[in-house]
Image (cartoon, rainbow, N blue to C red; front, side, top):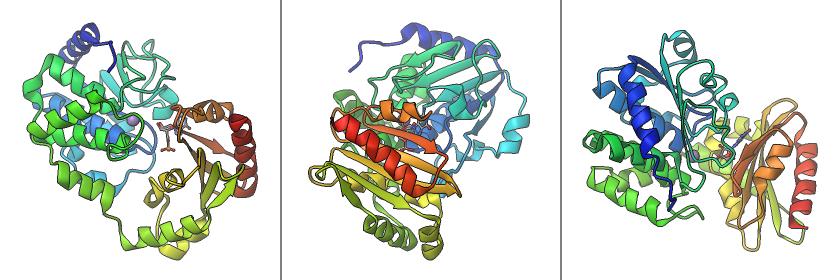
Length: 327
Ligand code: 5GP
Ligand code: MN
């Protein structure tokens, strides 16, 4: 567990909230469960306090998240752009570009930055950043416990539990620590529905999604004596199975489940000549360093980037990078 408790930052954050009436809660492009859960937890608290609040993160949002408590505050891009606000709270976002500038640095506006990416650029007026925390939701939980534990309703608990559940891959990844498990356990006492959330967000898949997974697994290739693997999602696969890119969320982890594999890349064709790359490292090899070389980023064991090229040369570029990493 991290030594940083952020007590000063939590009071400053609460003081900013008290001073302001309209709050935009934002997060990174294509928000995952941690980002969404953290946003919705904070938004529910603000709404209870009588604030005007909306949540917005750019990109694609899985329909599954629309069922969560707090989802009614999720806005469309247009509404978010014209929403008059005097405070921004950004979660799970290492820099303002990841929010497509829905959060801007402190020089421009009152902004609170809550994140667990070690590469965070500290753009907030208040920065609650702990690269050792398993999820952004861990930091949001610490905030609630510090300033308003009585505001952890069952709905808030669901959202924070989901954040930890998903960022730890169902409590399996290397970022699982005693704090993540302790908080998860406390959240169950606050009313989080552990079984329902695991079932809905980790286990259950649509028929079309599993068919897509079949095609993606079929694209699996091994490199570098089986220590690296790649997989891909083409637009043709999506068409054939009637799926969209967001249905392939989490597929990269199947590659990481391979025996002896250290490094995995999943390539997703987002547009002609544009490929989104998800990188995973099983152990100590730092994939965020590789991602950063191409304008991406992330954590040591999970990172991402976008390449303006076709699938074949994206694969070549990344496999070359993997070869360097593996030495
Ligand atoms: P994923 O592969 O699941 O999309 O992303 C893995 C991790 O890398 C996440 O923590 C995500 O925030 C980070 N990440 C993914 N793409 C980018 C990117 O383009 N820039 C930065 N800075 N981080 C990224
Ligand atoms: Mn996260």
